[in-house]
Image 1 (cartoon, rainbow, N blue to C red):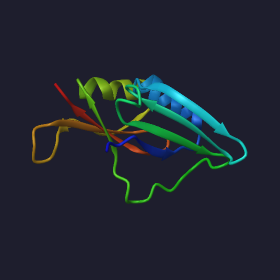
Image 2: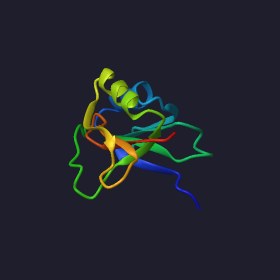
Image 3: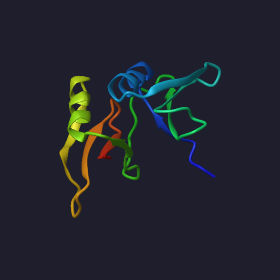
Image 4: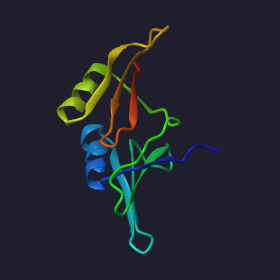
Length: 127
């Protein structure tokens, strides 16, 4: 068994795909549009989905905003330089919600950013 994907509901597919591809550097792997069921999908990731887990972005026609609730935490992404990753997000119009620094009680360097729908993304420095 392995994790295949995590689904995130988005309020604007074009905006979300642009964030994940242009700002975070993921690849758009595949898309599908289901007009009869009133939704569209886009799969994004850093590698082919046969080899690694990816994100499934789901746009439900006519829904521009979701209540994210309190159960979902974040998506974690390993990056070689957390400060550089945060700058890339800022330059792309994204929001840094926790500046780079050591995790509380540890030494790993982390930061948090938000995607256009408010989902939290943790950057963890991997060297």
